[in-house]
Image (cartoon, rainbow, N blue to C red):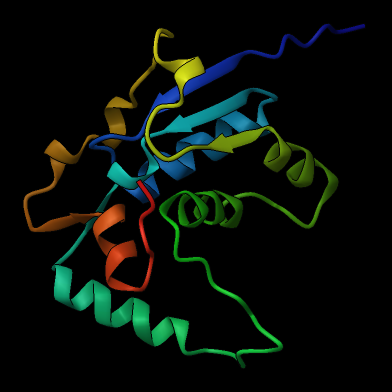
Length: 147
């Protein structure tokens, strides 16, 4: 009988590329680890701000207001849905993996003193062109930040 140890990884999304981080987190979730992502609004999306905002607003027009599909505007929800898209979320293993994911805006009090890891492969320093943060994109598409 094999014993599986569940470890919890706390990832700081500050300065990490959204897609690369999400794919690495999805693999970790499928391996049975719990993942907590902090500072979701500081994740990076590559590309020019104006083109990304126009592209996202066009995507948000899809569907009817009452029947859906409903699209999130909060950075933590956008990041969570990005990871969900990289999981086999219709299969039991994907559903269980998705339940092990937690995403927060900023750093909650219970995680202030804990050690966070960063993903070297997803650093924004690898980008050569322009980029914007997930928080900036969310504000442009209608997220009302509550302080």
